[in-house]
Image (cartoon, rainbow, N blue to C red; front, side, top):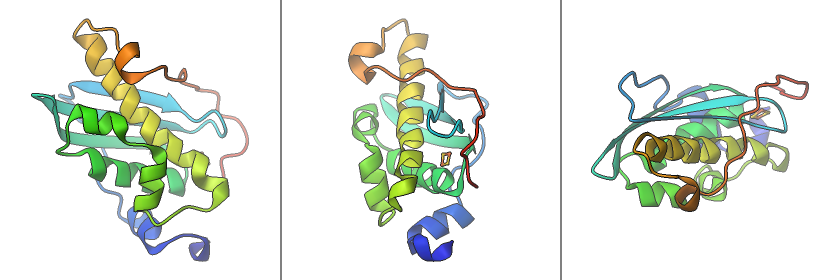
Length: 148
Ligand code: FES
């Protein structure tokens, strides 16, 4: 399997950054991947519009772990606006690419960050949809197809 993946993907898979929970998170987002049923949860600590800390947990494949790990390093210390602009494509590029069959896994990280930011606005009584956009509903149905 290693040959299919870049060194950066293997590094973030073997040593994922920012794994875990933030008990005092200001925002939590959970999303499911409709293609495989995997789940991602993202915790954010936000201070003055800046993401000061981030942690993630996933019930997902190696590519999901690697992309989430990379995504957390890309949003940590950045503003909410920057985090909202983070696309799964940018995360995949930062990892020097993913095999085409695994690109859908990278969507989980992008969506989880957006879901967490939506939660942040919701907690403050602000409708997140005009800011964050429409998110897919969490999908908890663990079906076939998740190849670890
Ligand atoms: Fe489920 Fe990658 S996220 S196969």
